[in-house]
Structures are given as C-alpha cells and as structure tokens.
Length: 130
Figure 1: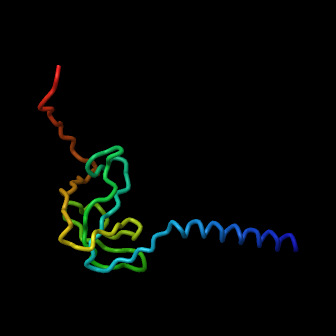
Figure 2: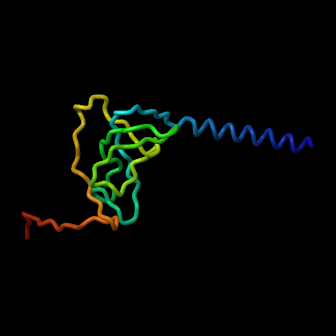
C-alpha cells in the first residue's frame, strides 16, 4: 500500500507539472456579440482559400459574431457564398480583429463550390526574357 501511495503522489506531481506547462500557452478568449473576428482556416484536402503552400492564408474574414452558443462556441455571420462552411465555431478557431471597425478592410470573398474544390484559372505572363 505504501508503494501505491508513493506512485500516486509521483503521478500527481507529474500531472501538475504538465498542467503548468500547458497553462502558459493557453489563451483565454472571450468575445461579445457584434464583435469582429477572423476565422482560422485549417487546411483540408481539396479545399483552398486563396494561395497554397507556405503563403496560404491562415485566417479569413473578418466576420461578425451573431451570438454566443454555450461556453466556448460562437455563431458567425458568413456570406451566402460560404454556405458550405459551418457558421458555429469554437473560440480556438477565432482571432480578434482590431478594436476600431473602420480599420477593417474586407478581402475578396472566397468561393467554394459543392465539391469543395475551386476552379484553376491560368494566368498569362506579360513580360519575359529570352
């Protein structure tokens, strides 16, 4: 019984050490309604938002929060072209925008078709050297 007690104490100290490491990196985010946020785009196979590779977009938006759902979820006001993207998102998928809404510059809308792919448009090179 003494060895079991010692093992439990050692496990408890190891758990508290790991919690202290993870608590340092945790962000406590709380948003209000009518607040503007960016939506994190996790790379999915076949879905691209803008460019691809190293310069691919991490966040798209900004979008307005309509309402809070539960403790950590929020419903966003998404444009009709993004009807395939779920409007309810966890707070870890959101990033706060600058405080002044007049500083928000809307980027071009993202078009996603029903097959979750986008159309590749060839671009001509106007100048070239031989």
